[in-house]
Image (cartoon, rainbow, N blue to C red; front, side):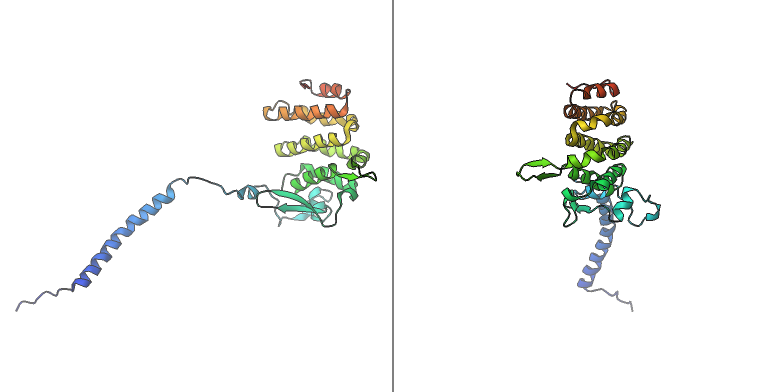
Amino acid sequence: MQQQKKTQPPAVLNRTRSLGKQQQQKPQQQQQQQQIQQQPKQGFTQLPSQKLTNIKTVDPFSDKSKQKTNSFAYVYNAGGIPCRVNHGCNTMKLQWNQGVEIGHLPYDPLMVTCFEGLVEEAHPYCFIATNAIKDMLNEQVLNLNFIIFQNAQEKVIPILAKLVWPLRTALSSQNDKVFMSSLEILKLLSNTIGSHLNSHLKNLLVPLSKRMDKKNQKEIIQDVLRQIQDNGGPDTLKVIKAAIPTYTNM
């Protein structure tokens, strides 16, 4: 007798067929996913918050014993600078410690230390040194007649000789960011003490003359020199022209 072939129920046949189709579709789906991943992304390639994370920062786990005992970084880590960085969503600002009044701070040695910190390239030292100087130079108070006057001038003039050489060192830096920050401080210092800067101006103009051949910085340097000339009086033009013959006050 011939044996009859066993036939499977229709439901089982449909299930096996569907499983076979799924197995055939899996390699195709995997290929499509790989193609999508390989395609270049459109739209924003960088999150806005990454602007803060891309800043050159100091390693908090580095060997602090390698830092010079008189460096700005060492003084700041030891708590000698009474301020810190307040990180916002997209911007940073300097925040002085609670109870600190800038007008009552000892500019010597605090401002001198901050001027020495202008050469720092790593965050947060470069940010703190620059912005602490700005706050101290912009310090204004009310006198007994309720008239606002610049309190910083009388504090800066006695220590000016201690500020000039670290400022010149920062202006001589090959780092463009350090140079531009120091140039901004030079302009603010001139606005604060006026003609008192004239006796030290020759030393500060030497590094500026070496930067005049850079097109992206020449006009900015010219603007700072014009401000120094306005603050220093008529004798300032001769000093500037002697150091930088290409300078024009037009």
